[in-house]
Amino acid sequence: MPFYREVLLSSWPSNIVSDLGAPPVQLDPSFLATLKQMEWGWYGRNTRGLLRNQVEDTRGRHRGANALKAPKFLSEKARESMSSGLNPPAEIRQASETLLSSNDLASLKGEAPAMYRNFEIKYSKFGVDDFDFRLVFFVLGMITKGVWLIRVGRYYNSTRYAGLENHIVNSYANSLLQVMHYTPLLRNLALQHAATACLASPCLLCELGYVFDMLQKAEGSTCQATNMFKALSSSPQGMFCYQKPKLRLYPNLCL
Amino acid sequence: MLVAGPLGLLEEEENKALSLTMMSQSLSRYLLEHITEAYRSILPASTTLEQELFGLPEPPKPEELLTRMLATPAVVSIRCMNCRSESPRPGTTHVIDLMYPAQKLVGRVKMPVARTTFSQVLMSSVERETTTKGWCSRCQRYQTLQTRKTTHSAPAVLTINAAVSSPEQRRFWATPGWLPEEVGIIVDSGQFFCYEEEALRFHLQRGAHNIAVYSLIGMVVNVDSGGQPQNPHLVAMVNGEHGPS
Image (tube, rainbow over all chains, first blue to last red; front, top):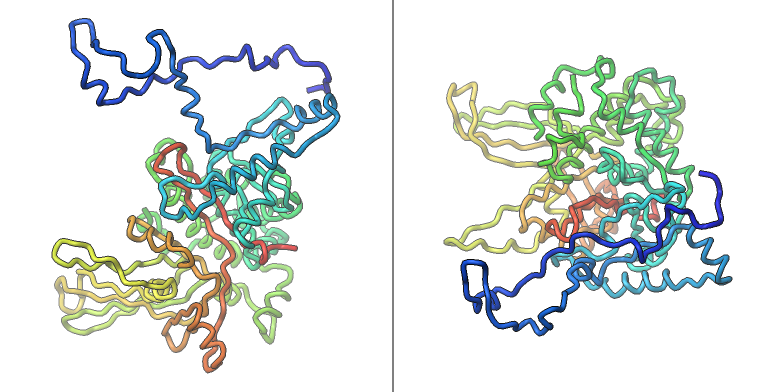
């Protein structure tokens, strides 16, 4: 994608982008009970408190007030600050307030606090590098007293702790890889092995070593563990030639 | 041959029914098993760091390092309750699956379990004392068998599988402060002891036993709001204090 300044034809303004197919209006069961059934449907008094020809906005409800607002793409921001001349941290403040207000002790509640919710990385024309990950990470650190949250997929991040992208197959393993990465002995063991002349292909321990090395060198930008996942999913005939016979029973024991 | 597919470690169509938690738990087991196999296969260039850390007199062999770092060497002894004969079996593990105290049934009401600490759960999970029906080769018939694990040492990296399968078990984890930031572990002649908070401080002060203090590095957490408003997903929580500087 060449660099551009003017608005592209393909980037539609929000007023022509419209949602299709709103979810149906949820009717109160007690209201339904008052209706009379006819051959062609139901009829009764209008007790909704709305005019007969008035349409309810059913989409807004689904978005939820508690959800975090998706941050703007970096390129969008750069363009905005060019035009307005200032770059207020209003979004940061707003997002952190959302986090703090929803941070009551909720260990037994059904719903997880906003900061633990899943987010999808939105890819702009410039790919993942265009995404603003820096928004609210410092707030998280404060809330949890020394326990850092390494978000899978690294949505908001202002730290030197790198995240792993979560749009790849098998990326459920990301969180386990992160925990292993921050276990000093394990990390060291994998790095040691990756530095040897190991010829097994694919070798999961070598791949682990590469992932850990990458996470450390990324200093806070995103990484992908694609090769590691590829090694995991390929069925490695040669890899287990030194396998002890007793472990062959393993698939039966597990799951 | 040991492949990742049959273990349900891959995100594929047929594995959709498996929960992320299960997949992550199996993966940790698989990876640690594999790490030890791969590490054993080729000597690393330098193990000076580990030699220093564990205070070893000479450069350690990979096997020895693995035992010190990842594996919990143990023997499972199976005892027939009828003829009292005992048969040992190797039971070395890399991941400890937690076993929660069973709920007592009084009449038809499930009684809430009295406050059980994390250390108590961990202790019973390492010993894994269970009673099952099984074949006794000496009695030549099915008998009640008692299995128990004897541990000889604890590795420097303890990997624990929370293995939560019911709302009651989840309650433990939902109790603020149930998971201590530090536990102390004493392994003495096949017995495994674990202490936290007050008891840990007491043992450290007394200094009668060789106690190893473990700090919580991090955990993988499943965030599940019952499918609403989002599907479950995993989050890693790590204590940055132990991380790379």
